[in-house]
Length: 109
Image (cartoon, rainbow, N blue to C red; front, side, top):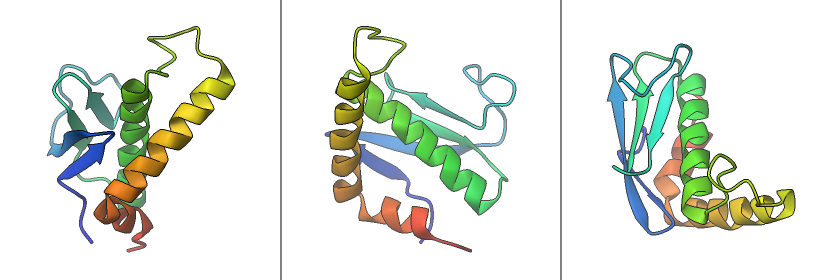
């Protein structure tokens, strides 16, 4: 299974793109970026499968936090329990809506 080109996250379809150079939003040491306004997840090309999977999951976490309204940078009044519940609900939806994404994450080689 190859990396998905699109991932449905709580009713929004994010495009997954691979970039050869870090864009303006990338900081030193970043390997991915989640643009919630444009619904785009960007990943740096040329990394190992495990690192690519990890970075994609990391960016999906950012998207779920944003879509559930539990992003700590935006809403500092959300308790740990509220955030955890939001993430659990959001991730369950992402996993159910994206069997190709799940297969990609489970890929070993």
